[in-house]
Image 1 (cartoon, rainbow, N blue to C red):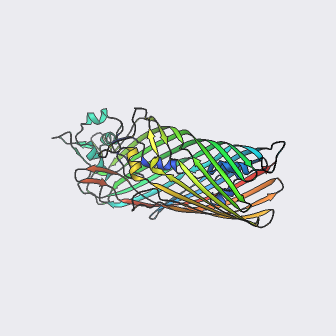
Image 2: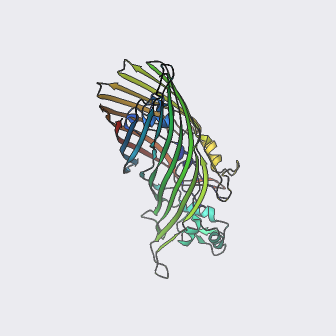
Image 3: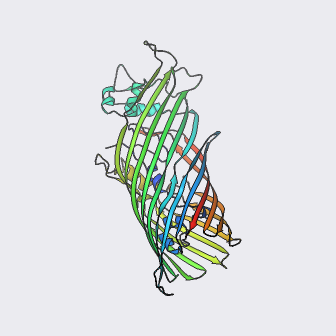
Length: 499
């Protein structure tokens, strides 16, 4: 069984090499179905519109709206900039956010009140991009992660730390950041003086993405009712390297100069879900839609490793002042289930010149769940010793995500678009608000059987996190809070052919 020590956000874990966290659950549960440029420009509000491959990920009944076969693909560029105080870092990503094919089959004989067409869709939508670099710091910190190492190591001999390998405390022992007392080897001294202040810095390099491969079916009944179903195969590819560094102040009398702890994790997973949906047109101007997404059931595997290195001001008797060690590269398999989603949609068509579309998505993030760890761990604990699933339930709640889009047809060849999306705050704590907005705009060109769409979107998200926390007899030992601003700029271009 894994020991789990955490607060919310990007917390550095002590006493374990790596553990599945509530942050991981939220990362893989937040998904964005905006693969094509048209959908991106209109805020992803396609639950009642259809006729766009991204809409299949929201409401598979949108597949029934197609009147002809179609092939499209969407290259994309994304720039993310993370800022904390006067520090900033950015990362560019190029990739394919969408590729799809729709085949339309029409019965030989149709009636006005019968089935008009049956459509099959096959393709891929990018639903999340993890590529991001961030840097933050706390100067003159009143606490140190070395204090966390000491709290967790006290009561264990150096041999026990070695037997329990891999632990962060073992790395601290091997790099002379934890030193057994001569009179009591179960207690440890630190290479800094009690109450000494430290400068702290953390860099995080994240890579990877989530994507969904769809096999979908849609049908059109009397141009009034559209139904659809989709089997989604989702993939997760996530990699993170986080380095936490502490250094003594320039006037410090301690022999320690600095040290770092580096945490590497790579997560891969494959999962499946089912989507069901319908669209109803009471008249030519109004469309109503509803869809249900089952949870996605993932089989996951983590690969992880920790490294630590220390640097002292003076050399030891053997002439060394630098020390380094690392844990073995380890693997852990488990299952993960995302929350269910439900979406209600509406759209208004005005004089065949303009479209106004709205989607409201309901999702309860507290229903995310880890299970079936390879060591038979179920990720459930108690009120006194909570595990990952307990923290998910106590930390997250249900939210409503709103998407809105507008399209205006300037001519038969040119359309202008704009969009807005609001993603609600998933945290229960009133002191935490990570809701944010996405603003988007774009245009589309139609020429014969060819179409081209372009879109730009912008979001600005504020985040907060702590570097470390561990319980002590006098209360939690916690680092200061770090505020991070995450700007996201995206450009998508869709090329498509109807036939």
